[in-house]
Image 1 (tube, rainbow, N blue to C red):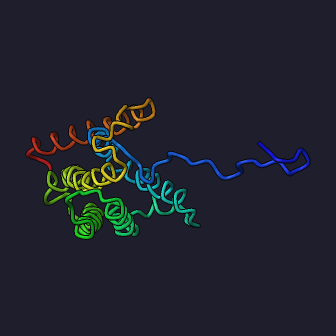
Image 2: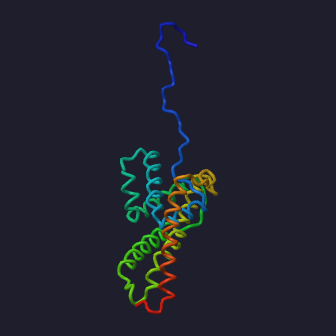
Image 3: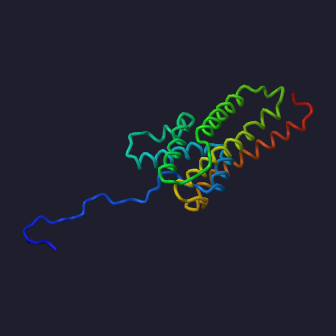
Length: 196
C-alpha cells in the first residue's frame, strides 16, 4: 500500500515472460512424413521456422525467409546454435553437429547436381530413382538435427507438434501424387526393353 495518496502510482511495466520455444519442435514421424512426401520442400519451411524462433528469442536483425530458402548456407550456423544451447542448458544429445551439417550440405548439393547431369538415356532407372532415394537419405540426416532440437526444447518426442494439420495433408497428398507418378514412370522404363 502506498504511503501517500499523492505519490505516483507504482505498476509493473516489465515485459511479460513468454513461453515461446527457441526452436521448431516436430515429432520424428511428422518430420519424416513431411520431408519425404514433399520431396524435401518441407526443409525450406523447417529452416525458416527455426530461424524465425531464434530471431524472436535473440532479438536479432536477421531475415528468416532468406535463411529458409538458402538453407544450405545456414545449416552449419543453425546446428552450431542448437549445440550451444544444449551445452548451455546441460542437455545431452549424442551427435556431431558440424559433421552432420557438412554431410547434409554436400549430399544435398551433390544430389541436385547429379539430378541435372546424369544421362537419363544410358541409365534411366538409376537417373530417375536417384532423387527419390536421395530424399530419404537427406531426410534421415536432418532428422538427427530435429531430434537434437527436440531435446534442446525439452520435448524429446516432439509431442508438442505431432499432429498433422489440414495444410500438412494437402502438401503430403500433392507430394504423394508426384511420388506415385514417378514410381509409375520408373516401373514403365524398367520394364520396357525398347527404352534407350
